Length: 270
Image (cartoon, rainbow, N blue to C red; front, side, top):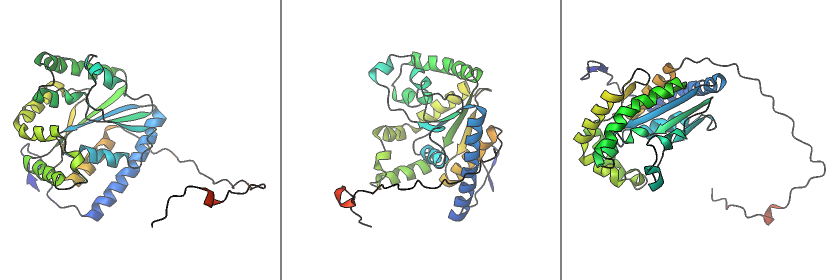
């Protein structure tokens, strides 16, 4: 164990694939109970995932969703705003994706685009940026008053680790789609993104919706730590499961299946 800059101890112990898969399986089973409690209790939950490019946000979202019901838990990953959306109230296009009772929504990036990429890349004016910093805490307090549970995660990755992941994407054709021109530009603006993140934390780390920072230099540990932490933020109980009995199949009653040679069957290559 070694000390981190903030005084906490960083766990340097390596995690084997077997340990990771076992821990992840246990956490995913708990997420199913967590999901059922949200539905049963009529909770409205929003989880925001922010962080630098290649920090691993998508990976943890994928593992959270893997065994959950998409009718209860869904992912929102919005593209760049349209020309029409640019004329709307800034938060408007996000509001339509907020959960109803018994739902959980995971935002793969969120309204905090304005505090990060839009600020650094000049996609918003200084007045729009300052208005966001003023309005965002009030907007989130309004969500809290509306009984929406807002959870915010920031995935922190080191300069060296991000470079390693970017190079991995460049050299792997199956991952090149993950590396957008904006990602490459963000790499050259590392310090400006750091400054923007510091201001964002200062202005929007509120009691009603505090920021939770995840050390994401080791992807597998970041996934486990984030999911385990999420499960502690909302008290839940394991609901009794109903016994399921498989019904008997209906009798054919004279029905005959049409010949398969009349169908456009997919060739069985394996």
